[in-house]
Amino acid sequence: MRALLLALIVGLLAACGSVSATAQNTATAATATSVPTATSGATATASASTNATVAAASCASPATALTELTEGPYYKANPPQRSTITATGVAGTPFVLTGFV
Image (cartoon, rainbow, N blue to C red; front, top):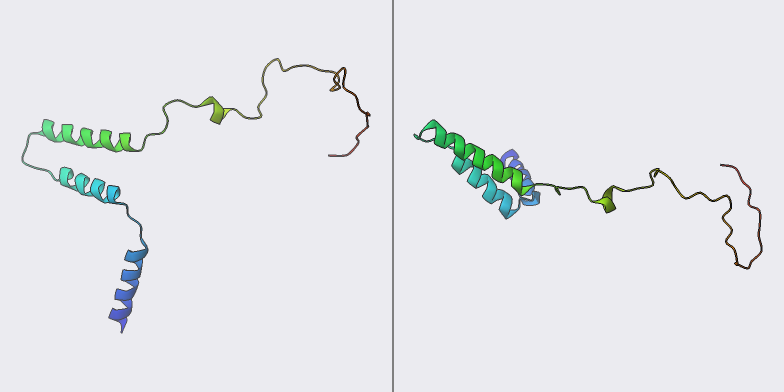
């Protein structure tokens, strides 16, 4: 009974886990190239650095910060200065607004 329950739990976990095909291909390629062979040390080092470069290139962020994404409600030097927010030539009734913050 325990073996059946254990097999059921393992099967459920395997079915619920999400591994994309590219992740499986990357893992297979990484293990295939990571196996040491009887080659010279320079070739093995070049292969390792190539794998590191490919891995770094696959999940790179944008190279430059976009102004649209970085700008926010921050202080800017020399903001426009107005002593009143009323506009000339606009009709309407002025009102006083009071309150506490």
